[in-house]
Amino acid sequence: MTTAANPAQHILDSALALAEARSWEAVRLYDVAAATGVSLDDIRTHFQEKEELVEAWFDRADAAMLQDAAKTDFLRLSTRERLHRVIMAWLDALAPHRQVTRQMILNKCEPGHLHIQIPGLLRVSRTVQWMREAVHQDATYLHRALEETALTSIYLTTFVHWLNDGSPNSIRTRKLLDSLLKTAEFVAGGLEGLFTLLSPSSPPRLPLKK
Image (cartoon, rainbow, N blue to C red; front, top):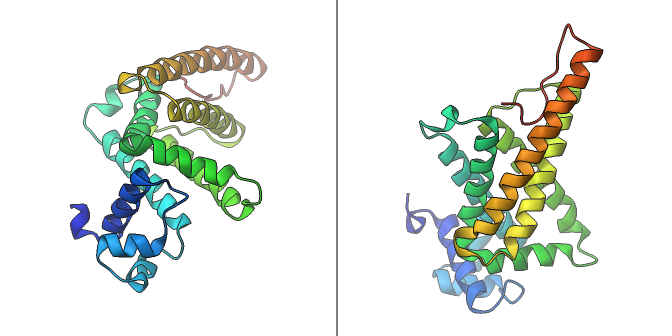
């Protein structure tokens, strides 16, 4: 479905285009309405406030990631390769508006913006959960917590690096992510050996096990 056929996506695209020409901070919903050819009340139908446009932008990245993970070749990859692919698919979806994305994040980090920082933490958690689902990570209890902690750290480290990566096709980010995943896989293997010694009857499933 094209964004023109989807009013909410059309509004989001108009806001992103305005932000590219000005900055995200300078975008106003009345300007978005004028650029989209709708009324402010039409925008309110889809977005209760400007910050919801940010959520919609990251929702689009979530969707692109899950669509890529649904391709027939995906589950033939190792866990590390799947994780690399879903994280980069998420970032590649944002790449057309990398500068605007950086401005969105900086806006969230400004002092006094707790009302958007707390939902931002929930946003990170939600994306990480979808990444785990896409990769088919199925650990439980403590081992699930270890997987989530490892993946959240890797995802956020990669995202922050990507925001300022001007290399072609984000090659520096891809190399960093590969290094982080290899390190996590090595650490996970050592931890699994330790847990096996402690509880040989029920070896755990730890982050990034192939």
